[in-house]
Length: 124
Ligand SMILES: [Zn+2]
Image (cartoon, rainbow, N blue to C red; front, side, top):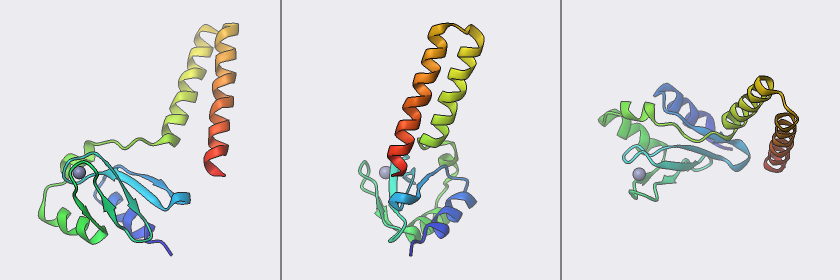
């Protein structure tokens, strides 16, 4: 069993941006000390920052958050492919609606097809 719910509620409560990949049992979020992106295993809650070598588990984060200021982390965004996918589709749709040429329509179809391909590949 994973401890994902405990980890996610901790990050949510502290308004820290994250990306949860349930199929990989991982949560990505900014490192509490250097703000580069780190990955936590939701089974063990362990994580290691490859940039500043800060390491620990959920308890380490809770302790750190109580002793330090983590407000700066609220501004750090973690790359979220689901959100990016939605935004790319939206922008391409807007461009196609605005210019409506054969090329924009073709581009829109091709991007939709490509994103669909990667979504299926990711979820399998
Ligand atoms: Zn770090």
